[in-house]
Length: 126
Image (tube, rainbow, N blue to C red; front, side, top):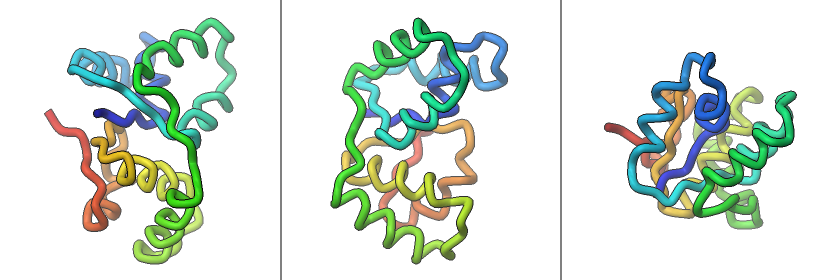
């Protein structure tokens, strides 16, 4: 199970994106591929043609995981445990969803998620 961060969804669809090659390497691995509802919201906040949204949804063979009460509780704990930095709120939500699903998180920004490894997050690695 591989949980995709927003940057990899964008990179997979945009050949000019700096993360395109990395995204293609991740997607060449056996899935299923998921993302959190939070990462999907971030993806949807980019100005992309609707056809790309449909393609991205097709990449997510495991679906979009909800941000539910358990994820909210864990995200709050992660936020407090990692220094309560406002800029990390969405990252804590994405990390919590990945932790609870037992998936590895594939991201082009691993440094943003390193603080969560000590709390159970598994980062995707080749």
